[in-house]
Image 1 (tube, helix red, strand yellow):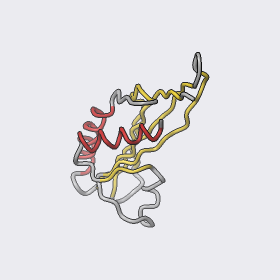
Image 2 (spheres, rainbow, N blue to C red):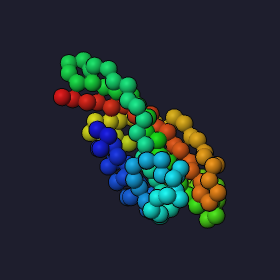
Image 3 (cartoon, rainbow, N blue to C red):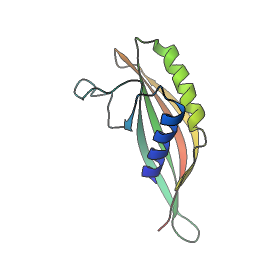
Length: 134
């Protein structure tokens, strides 16, 4: 279900927010920006948080978890205003995204990372419900 959720997020962003130039899985990309191959911005990195599972009545499991979207923009190209506009578009597309094995994507937290000189990282956290069937 994580693969399906990642692919759904990527498809929705590609279709509905074409200004996002790069989408990938999160791997502390911003922390090691000087050491990595460059990627186009604005970029969105998808981070999967832990999932709390419980048995589902009948068979399988249901779970609750977090998915974080790390929205990375250039500080010098319109700064925070452009980032907020882009994040608004992303929020509108992500709200209540559903697919095979997951549903109920709901915005739960926003964080801004100011620790980088040339880029701005905004982290949008969404709660999500999962189902896992044998």
